Amino acid sequence: MKRIRVEIAPGVETEFVDRDRALAQVVEWAEKSTRWPVVIFGPEGCGKTAFLRQSMVMLRELGYDVFYLHPLDRVFAAEVDDADVKSLFVDLVRRTLEDERWGRLALAVFDLVREILKRRRRKIAIIADDVFQAIGLDKAAAYVKGLLNTIEHPVYKYEKIVVLVATSEGMSRSEIGRHRWADIMPMWNMPREGFRQLYERIPGPKPSFEEVWRLTGGNPEMLLRLYKAGWNAEEVVLRLMQNKQLSAEFVSRWRRWLEAAVEDPEALWSPDAPKELIKQLVEKNLIVYNMYDRRPSFWVDQPPPEKDPELGTGKNVAWQTPIHREAVRRALKEGS
Ligand SMILES: Nc1ncnc2c1ncn2[C@@H]1O[C@H](COP(=O)(O)OP(=O)(O)OP(=O)(O)O)[C@@H](O)[C@H]1O
Ligand SMILES: [Mg+2]
Image (tube, rainbow, N blue to C red):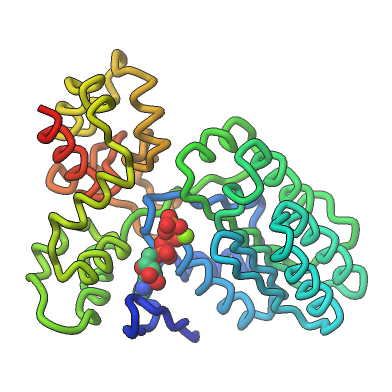
């Protein structure tokens, strides 16, 4: 199987590393079809996009016609056998890039799938990365329903079908989860040994692996941010703190709960934890609330351990990475 090339920092390219279990899951989906659209969520920067790009190449190798949509990055591809459908798609993409009506393109994929199935029965994959942000969270559930219809009630028969969707939007999970239209699967940061492989590919002098693991919890994006910041962790933390708009007001309003959560995220699982705070922490992509049962069949790739106090992972609530927790800790300190 071909591994894609990824640019991990300006001028630093490597191949897609590890995620062996996740890739085996793609092969399994390709053999069986996905019964529901698989909606993958997980910490920001954990590697969802890289995984979907790798999946696209694998599915193609496995004989699939693949539609790939990643509106946020303006990347669209129709890796299909029919040249005319491909050029139709390219044309649609070009027009969409002009007027930014991503929803129309996302919907057009349904028509294109129908069009190529009309010609002959075959294996079809639709891979949609972060489409909800582009089409609007309010339309997320409807879109997933459309994907489910493509699986359940195809106008023309397919041989196999694989539908993969990723979202880094914390709220889309509850929006989609209200219906039974998808198989919602979490994906976590990289497992330790896989992450070590990525760490080893970073050039130049660097802190020990142990230290980088403790800082990032295996999140590839955080590894790359640290590298780009010359391994100045404080800079990365401060920048995140600013991005997340952890204002003095926010911190003072929720101080007591935030202090408890920094010590142990599970504090937010207590029945009297304020719902408004939890909502904001989820929206800001700081925590994952309601972690799944750790049985591997529920997860894409390997699940995180049941509990890891050092990294800020609790049984039901987890900081997305230790740096996210650090940003909150820092905001608490500055606000005091
Ligand atoms: N398995 C991997 N091998 C090599 N590089 C990886 C791997 N996973 C992720 N990366 C790199 O780490 C960075 C973050 O990954 P990626 O963008 O896929 O995360 P994401 O979960 O899609 O993030 P977001 O939530 O922001 O959408 C990227 O530069 C990506 O190329
Ligand atoms: Mg992404």
